[in-house]
Image (cartoon, rainbow over all chains, first blue to last red; front, side):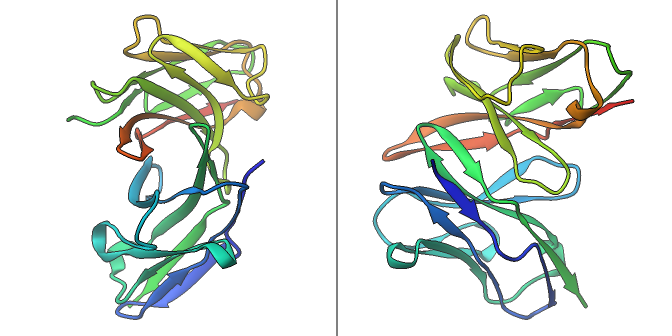
Amino acid sequence: AQSVTQPDIHITVSEGASLELRCNYSYGATPYLFWYVQSPGQGLQLLLKYFSGDTLVQGIKGFEAEFKRSQSSFNLRKPSVHWSDAAEYFCGVASYQKVTFGIGTKLQVIP
Amino acid sequence: DTGVSQDPRHKITKRGQNVTFRCDPISEHNRLYWYRQTLGQGPEFLTYFQNEAQLEKSRLLSDRFSAERPKGSFSTLEIQRTEQGDSAMYLCASSTLDGVGETQYFGPGTRLLVL
């Protein structure tokens, strides 16, 4: 069975600083990978996805993620964080339609 | 494209009562999913439909839970004899194939509190 590990439960960064959120997955075949963002009390919004091809994928709101098969990782990055990026971020891997999510990383942005 | 909608957004009920939630997917999506998210956790898969057929159910979906999608459009999730452990956010998603793979788009969720 597939699994996702997000090792950082909570991260605090200063506004304008760069950001990297870690995600490691366990899956036997070529994974379909996702990053979603969730604001308090809201549903999940898709940031970006990887199905195949270029291992560096661009998403919305200036986010990007890099798929590294050798490390089983799909880390999310943003060069300059904005206060509005404060939210919870979920990495997911898809298998037979359903998505398995990590526990999430809560991002706090300080001025 | 109006997105996935869910109703109600919030529900407070007493233990032992039955509750029903509704999900309206994006109109051209033929797959629909239900997930449950408890505090401090990521969403967990409950069940999914392709058109009106329910194709997979998680072991998390006890006998008190039932989901339907009668005409392949909206779906309902019913919980009978609610328990305090059912308190969670219930998320619905619908999906489309993007050439190679499938992308799920989520609704705003229904937050259930069982007293």
